[in-house]
Length: 171
Ligand SMILES: CC(C)(COP(=O)(O)OP(=O)(O)OC[C@H]1O[C@@H](n2cnc3c(N)ncnc32)[C@H](O)[C@@H]1OP(=O)(O)O)[C@@H](O)C(=O)NCCC(=O)NCCS
Image (cartoon, rainbow, N blue to C red; front, side, top):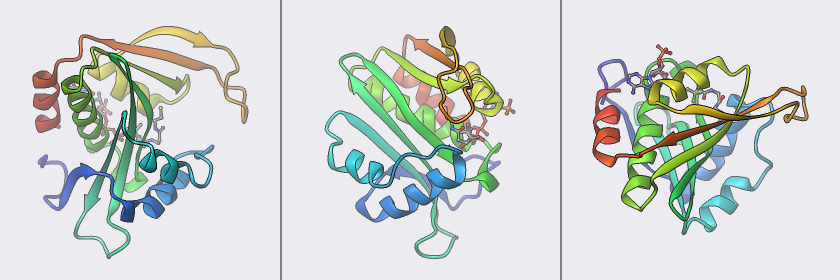
């Protein structure tokens, strides 16, 4: 793992045992978390999805999950449905590692580009996405219901599994 992250943190596919922790993480990370049961639905309908978590094995049993991401594969596109890193693990490259890992898997399954939607004021997320090469391709004014914030639509073209593997390994 990265020199910035503990050797005890690793990325793996989401398992049934992770679902309660994933929902708890989502509520910690977002002001408007996914509704209850959303992760269970994603897990049970994952034929065209990539569900990843990062687990820190040095944490207490039942509290190992420190990050999660869901990508939806639609024909040759990978939509980033959600990505969340536990607050005390943010800013250490874990979001980058998780997203690059998910995008590399998506590329191996035929995705050539990625799309996502992000709050215009989410500076940490935008640093992550722009750093990876996403570009803003659209804007939905007042899209978010809680505070009427604008949504930016971002696209990353030319997904390359090997390059993404290298980014994930470096993060
Ligand atoms: C947004 C979020 C997932 C980012 O995760 P994180 O672990 O804090 O992010 P990272 O530490 O990986 O930061 C990304 C860094 O990688 C850098 N980076 C991105 N691509 C890179 C690349 N190809 N090579 C080198 N660096 C790169 C970015 O510049 C950024 O560095 P900086 O903060 O020093 O400028 C996290 O802050 C979070 O969970 N926020 C709450 C939930 C949320 O808003 N999710 C996104 C919804 S759209």
